[in-house]
Length: 89
Ligand code: C2E
Ligand code: C2E
Ligand code: C2E
Image 1: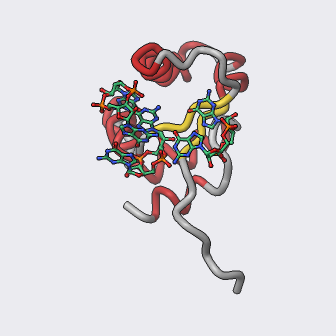
Image 2 (image 1 turned 180 degrees about the vertical axis):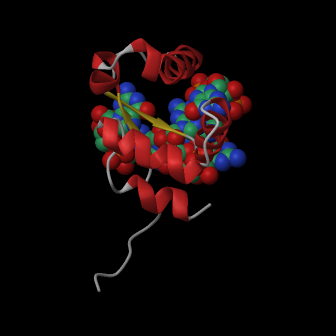
Image 3 (image 1 turned 135 degrees about the vertical axis):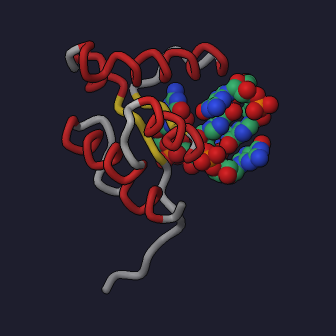
């Protein structure tokens, strides 16, 4: 098997996020917008978030962190590599 690198980051695809229906992605979009505003980071196509933030988002979505990660991968908002970031919890 290929050697594992360092824990990958959780990187949100903001362009994809903006295309999703609000019923699904509204809470995540508001959360990401809050982080962008706190950082003053408005120009990115992607946003790196804290592992801790995925835990908070999982509570908001009433899922486990693993279930939410799978959903976000299906939506195209997270990359499949994100599984390794969450497995490292
Ligand atoms: P804070 O948590 O007290 O962090 C202060 C500053 O430390 C941040 O200013 C940033 O320059 C640096 N910092 C803290 N953690 C990290 C990290 O994991 N990586 C990097 N590269 N730098 C880090 P910044 O970015 O202006 O953020 C200001 C405040 O906004 C933060 O204060 C925090 O309260 C909030 N914030 C920003 N981004 C996030 C985030 O992704 N998640 C959460 N929960 N809060 C965030
Ligand atoms: P990387 O982490 O692989 O990020 C690659 C590029 O994705 C970044 O290029 C930037 O264009 C985008 N990107 C990733 N996360 C964010 C985000 O939260 N906000 C925005 N606006 N863009 C994001 P960039 O900025 O030229 O950085 C190149 C490399 O420099 C990064 O590769 C990383 O290795 C390092 N780097 C940049 N900022 C930080 C940081 O705050 N903390 C750490 N540890 N490394 C950083
Ligand atoms: P990163 O900057 O490469 O940081 C990787 C990990 O190093 C972070 O994972 C965190 O565990 C630790 N770390 C880095 N800086 C600090 C710090 O100032 N205080 C503490 N307590 N730990 C720190 P984490 O938290 O999962 O964050 C993942 C990525 O999200 C960061 O990668 C960075 O790209 C972004 N990020 C997180 N918080 C902030 C923030 O407050 N401001 C900015 N600008 N970026 C942040």
